[in-house]
Structures are given as C-alpha cells and as structure tokens.
Image 1: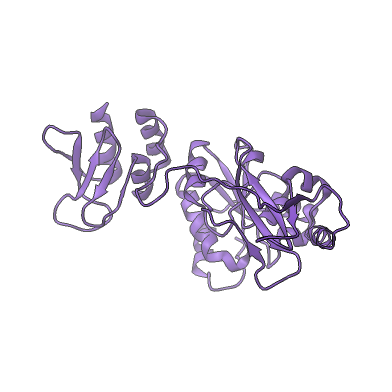
Image 2: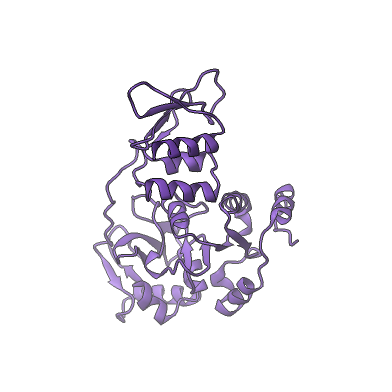
Length: 314
C-alpha cells in the first residue's frame, strides 16, 4: 500500500521521493518553490506534509494534491488508497464545528404582525421576488430590536438541518446594508436543499439562490470556500452553472478555471448587470436553459477581453 502511495506521489509531483531511514517520511522536490534540494517532507502514513522552504503544509494528501493540481483520476486513485480525506486543515484554523445561533430577537416572517418593521420587511421581500412559500421553506425572519434591528434574517442550514450561517439585510436601506454573524463563511449555503446528483448553480447571495429556486448554492461572496470545494469533489459533481454579476468577472473566470481542471462541465449564465431577483424566476429559468457550456476557446476569449464589462458569447 505504501509503495502505491509513493508511486502516485511521484506522478503527481513529477519527481521521485527519497525515504528517510526507519520512518514513514519521504522527501520530494517541492512544487511550491525552486530549490536545489528536496524540501517537501511527507508522511505517507498520516498524510501530513510540509515544505521547509515555502512553509506550505497540511494534514492530508488531498490538500497537497489540490495544490499540486492533480487530475481528477489521480484524486480518485488517492481516495481508493487512503479513503475519504480528513477535513482538518492547518493549525491556524479551527477544527471544531462553529456554533451559529439566530439573533435573540429573531421573529418568523410567516407569523403575521402589525409591526412597522414586519410590514417594511414584507414589502422588501416581495420586491426581491420572495414568495410566501420561500419564507416558509427558508425560515425567513426579521428583527425589530437588538444587533440586527430593522433587518430580514435569511438562515442557512446544513445537510442535517443545523444552522450554519445567516444573512441580515437592512430593509430601510441604511448605509450598512448587510450584517452577518462573526463566524466563518466556509460553509455550504442552503445545503439542506441541495441535490448533489443534479446540476448545481453557484451564485453570489441568498436572494439570488432563492430567486433561482432550484439547486442553487449561495457563496456569500464571489469565491468557492474550502468545504464546498471538497464536497464538489466527493459528490462527483459533473455540471455547474455559474451565476455571478458582470462586475465579478475576474472571480468567475478564476472559479471556472479551477472547476474545469477537475473535469466539471461549466456553464456561464450571463446576467448583463442584473440580479436573478431583478429578472424573475421565469426569465432566470430561460437563461439557465439556454446557457452554453464553457470550453477552452470561450474561456480564453473571455480572459483576453476581461477588461470589457460583459462576457463574450462564443
């Protein structure tokens, strides 16, 4: 088994490892920095690895393979040899599951009220295309008092139904539009409702995901976080549609490159300076159905002309 792992490492790192005496440690030439000596140390039993020059390191080989741009087949081979990855990352990051709680003053939007904040929140949600069914499905609420005063609260739940994040949006259009909990965004948004066997849609925010109404994951920003990247691999996702604003084009192209490297079909949904909640469900559905697959030609064309405001259709 150990020799098979070493052989796979040799192919991924494009170098030959040298075994340290009486240990499970091997030294490889580092892919992270040019050096005249092998400086990448790997324990093939525990999966821990560290480059003594660049200071890159991790606690499992899947992390190393990702950084070394291993192919999908090589990742599959590693999975067969060592099993699923250990999700611990590095010593600077927390290894405990973060605890997220809804604001103490949270009230459900599904329970009608004569409160001015409730009425304003309902007007705001209707303007964003949120329906009564959406309010019930996503357990959308609001706060009249406290740290999240005058905000609608959109919770996100993991696959087990536990709260993993929430977004607070001001309904009176104050300068601070969004106020979110002081926890990591490295979670899978709306995971409770995701069917990994169907094509996925990655979008920027919760209102985008709600407007799309089908298998959409809000990124809470413009980048794919670590846990989602790992889950995309483990679930063997084959097709992803990327719905990001035109002003996020640079981020979208970077994301597309990473997804395509892992053999995933990528489709850009061109929003033309509009949000999904602005154009409505029917038009959004039409856009998704008529989106072309991103290939090398279209990817390079968009990268060459990335200073332009809009995506190029190839």
